[in-house]
Image (cartoon, rainbow, N blue to C red; front, top):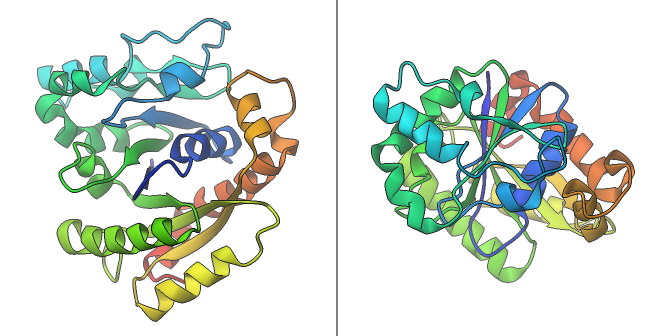
Length: 259
């Protein structure tokens, strides 16, 4: 199925929260995979379906070991856990110290994700030159970058878009489709359109998909720290709209053309 790589260019604009929100609202069954090289959040933020903690030994590390034994036989499904969110998850690294345990398996992850029976939403964390997660971004069907609409966030995003286009063929005509999600207040009616105008003026070939409402209380519902119906929150409603835009493979050419 389709592999979506989510990442940020700088700081903490809420990639993990956006990825979890999208997975919870996806129009079809989907997997949430945590491959953040700096250490994942899924293990700590989400609970198992039983209400207990997720197993740190079953996830990216065990998948990496399976890939090293034979990428052709490695199956993502064997390393997933059912979360209380109602979504199957691939638990990430507990810390950057575990990076060495994956080694060359990074380059095989896109193929393993691509042959899974459902869409896979991959949280890649912050993308910097030389990031271990770069093969995942380069091999994804669609790349989604999350940004806060402040000066530094926008500046770093522009530079990262140029870098990804030049070094990995991500974005622009013929490249991997790229979308941008803006994390901001639900009252912010201008940032998304302002960013689209900027990207169009610089011919970056990027589509601004919309906003993910900055809603801390809704994020606590995702993690089970607060009771409530997530889909009825500001973040939930914005995630539903974003998931509907992204969840159809037929729309990805529009992302590539920045329309």
